Length: 268
Ligand code: PGA
Image (cartoon, rainbow, N blue to C red):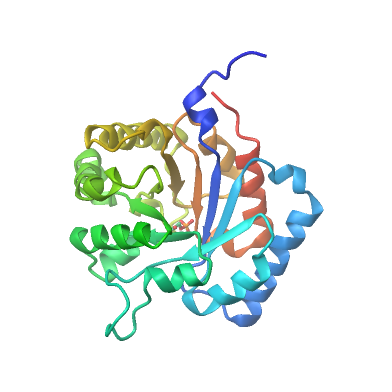
């Protein structure tokens, strides 16, 4: 047996996560969950070797937990409070998410940073609580179009990553990074595979520079207008370990097709 060309990539299990954002209702959530389970039953071998999960809106997490238990699909939340349980009206704690058997929690999605003014200090608290309560944080980073055009991509990412290196360093690799260029989210514009690779490699080096142990083993997902037509080329890049899928995760056939692309990714 020959050794894989890229042993670091080979030991990072591909991961595809669907971020439903604030969409749907009980009926559409039921249907989507049923369609995902049907997809798994139809061709289990096509999904072998990939880790899969969905992020429903808070009110439908319990439903996802009930339907997806025992399947290949895990579930998580799109946000979490930066406080533990207590008098924080309207918030949802990491402990509550763990109680609903969530595996994952998104932290620092660009919509949270931009529309809800989440700060790096709050994000660090969220990561710390998530880890403490047994969740796997999926930390989202990415630059805006103006920042990319001003050649600031690396400095923006450096600031976002450096702010979290302290908490990530003690996480024992129990976290995932999602690179989501803001200009590619929901716009139909996708980073080219080469652009994604360049940034993913940079993120990995920045984690190492920030003294996060085992950076070569950390999974880094790409997000931003991933579709069945571009998934395979993105996932084939040496430092791209899967995807965080928004719009396409609301269409079961598209999401399953992207999941299959991750299962087939070529190890380069
Ligand atoms: P998109 O969203 O796939 O619709 O671009 C990705 C995300 O925001 O997680």
